[in-house]
Image 1: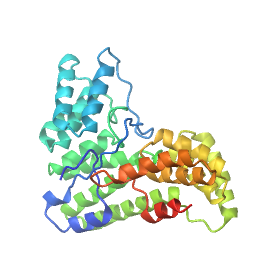
Image 2: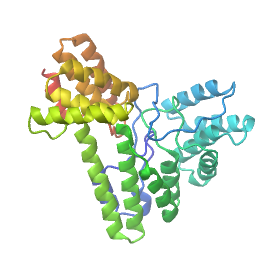
Image 3: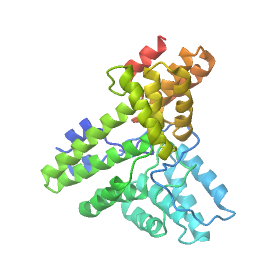
Amino acid sequence: MLQGNYLVFDLESLKTLLKKDFRQEFLLRAQAQMLTLLICSAGFPITAFAANADEPQFLSDVHKTMVQDNWAECAALGELYLRKHKADPMGSAIKGYALLQQYQDKEALPYLNAAIKGGATSLPPAVAESHANNLWSLRGYSLMRSGKFAEGIKDLEKSLELKPRTCLDILNQRIDCLNVGAAYKKMGQVQKSVSYISAGDLMKKQYHHVFYPPLKNAAEAKFNASTLQAELRSDPKSSILMCKYAAMQMYMKNWNEALKYLDRTIAVEPYLMPARLMRFQALKRLKRAADAKKDLAVIQKSRDKAGVNVWAVDQKELSEAMRL
């Protein structure tokens, strides 16, 4: 079922789906967020493409179609661009992705192949919403959906080799794990299937602990914050580290310090609703109600969108924050 613009499995659904027919196993779940900018994952860089005068307008037009989930129009734009700029990796990536979203895997694969061969590793920035699926992951998924499990697994394993540097990277790699697990299940390799599904489950916990670390006391939070500061000096653009550090500061009630790093996190991942919830809490503690309401409005708007919101905030946490 195609609901939007992001490939998503949740663990419980996958465990059930593994018992069903293959056609039901590989679902496309999604959410159409309200954002107008994709900050491309630093963990999945895109090779610099040769700029041309048509590129800015092309990206703008593509972005509009993706916001509207108009994948037929998106594919048409990619085709027109490729006619003028033959074998352009960006055009190929866009065309391949748009076709994949329409379940046209046979047609999508040549474009994804061309994009990867041309040096692209992920979708270009500022054209899609709230996801940074890299091309290894996209092509691997398309191959699996075409019944080419072994080939698809190879691509997804390449995706899993990349170090996650944003919270979205963790979610993307979790999806990769679950998809590989489903493929191994279909191939009759149950032990490998369970291993990858378990890894996906651990990634879900890893993602949760970025925002809600299991801390015993303030001393532990202070020690962890000190360690994270050292890690941030060597990797200052990692939104995972920024958000973890902010969570430690939240635990110690250092609201201003937490807010500084939450601002940085959201600048990188504006669709990251748990980070927005944390910032909402910090702003309320600092008596900045007007600013807090802005984050709350974004959170509530995202919850009203159709599809599965993999960045959805925990309802209990949201309820507690509302009472601050």
